[in-house]
Image 1 (cartoon, rainbow, N blue to C red):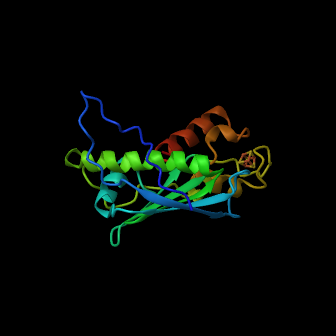
Image 2: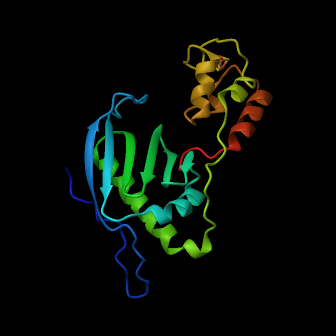
Length: 196
Ligand code: SF4
């Protein structure tokens, strides 16, 4: 069990307005995660929030582009870099596949800042109650050579398409694509919002 992270860089100067803080404290727990695809990211982080942030979630969804969004009870999941999924609900934040507690604390401090910022600026943000569009592996597969040549390090094009659909691979990772086909796949993938 770790104490809450309070080092959010929010100390106001005389010329700054104090931010309206919704989330001020939380406690953090870690457990082992054996589901991570990326080496060296073997911890799952769970933060229990001391404040209820449910009202901020549609605003956070609008800014971060949720992979899934459930309206009632509100729950938002989005992709973070290096294959991480972050889930936020009314009183918790779960992060899969973190390297160590330091990385988890950095992500939590960033997310605390994001939650407090969207809450403060909610009058300027249109809340969003649906998930962002997400790529389908089948549509990506159609744009691949489908030769299962293995040059990308994956056993099949389907395996590659699955990774590309979660943002872990891009068009540039398939060396078998012609430059025109690579551009077409890159254009397709650019319509989606992967990591924040
Ligand atoms: S390099 Fe491209 S064509 Fe070859 S297996 Fe990977 S995705 Fe398929």
